[in-house]
Image 1 (cartoon, one colour):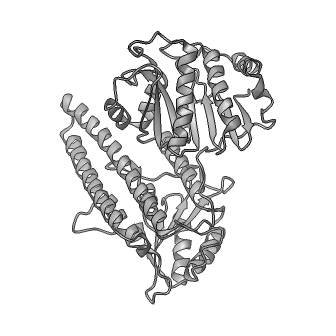
Image 2 (cartoon, one colour):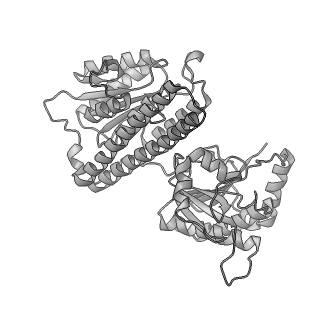
Length: 466
């Protein structure tokens, strides 16, 4: 059954999808809500559930608003940069007559498209606005939105990606309804039919990718590092809310004292990390970003931090470490952590070791890894996140889909599997990662790439300075 149809407008694209908007990797997700942005049902509740309480707390500062308004907030834990809250329920502006359903949808859609330009963004995902509690007609809304978007894309100079997600949350549509929708859509918006792509697109991220071979200025490096640290702090803030909610639930039910003590400890660890990143942010803001470039001309042996999960990749790690030693480099990683008499938390230890290393080497297999409760992230993702904030070479390797792996090694937890998939998408978007399928294949490539680092040849495909 066809659940996606795409239309091309020059270099821009509009895609109609039957699916869940919270799975989109667009830079902006649009939410449909009431004038208090309560996020209490439908798509807004789904976005709140996926993105965390930080979204609703940010929205609370900006209400009440009027119908057809659009409010911008953080996207919380979602991959998006922003949530555009479209107000489809609420009082109308004083002195104005009530506006029609079509006018509400038209105003909101036009405003969202204009805001993309203001914020210098290139991808946006809409739901079918107002089709939940507001009760707007499903097909009429999609057609109204598509007409506005099509008119915009026909004259747009800067290419963008737009998606409209149609999700049957109440189970009212059958397979034949999906087919009828597309047929009705083409009839009611005839100028779109001429732009329909004959070959339907496969699922992919709509966020812009990092272009290889682009040399960053010191200022651009600094700006990127600041942005990365801010994202890490946002992730920690969302996890803090989650830990606090669990603690409140336990205390209200006179829960297990040991679990309460454990949650309080994780909150202290979370606070320690957030303060460390705040200090890092201030340091980065006041320093010359170019000062942290890798000095390959130094007599000092370079240190490589090896990051990966263990159960599925322990043999791969051993082979990689052997190649690092062959290159007369030092190795840092989980094998060398040991006991710490100062009782440094695992997350703090990771941050410190990655920061001190000259090179980050990340291997991504079929497991997400053990999750640190203080951050809500696996150790592997923590290591990758910390490496992203540093202006040093990052060597990245992702296992191929056709690689031979033990079934017992594959991530079975659905939440962890989703996090692993998202992490791999980030890695493949931001780096020219090498796709390996055997230990010998990975070992050979690592040895070759380490040689490129030593000669400062950062132009080869498998090595990405970031």
